[in-house]
Length: 131
Ligand code: THU
Image (cartoon, rainbow, N blue to C red; front, side):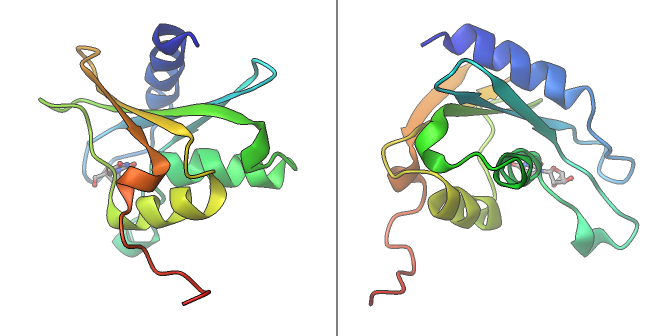
């Protein structure tokens, strides 16, 4: 898999971020098994709690286009952080719901420092309905 291309796509997605309040821009790219890419960025609101993170934007775009977890090769998130960006708890729940446990997530920063992690390792001991 071309991780470098995926990081490029997330960096492009980040340029679309609407973050006038935090000024912290985040980009996300979902690589599909057919080679297509779905991009997402964070979208803030003056009612702060309505903010949508980049990962959720990309994942909600994916679902709304009829694309499912079985079509996903990998997902990448990028922000201007010292270490590779780490997603918030809400996004971890959404990734655990909408992606397969073994799907690879690439956390990156603008220097392209990258951390590879599986969805299942992002949210250990998560709430399960079957419990
Ligand atoms: N944010 C994301 O989009 N993804 C993350 O993984 C971390 C945080 C956004 C939310 C908000 O617009 C800004 O970054 C600051 O928290």
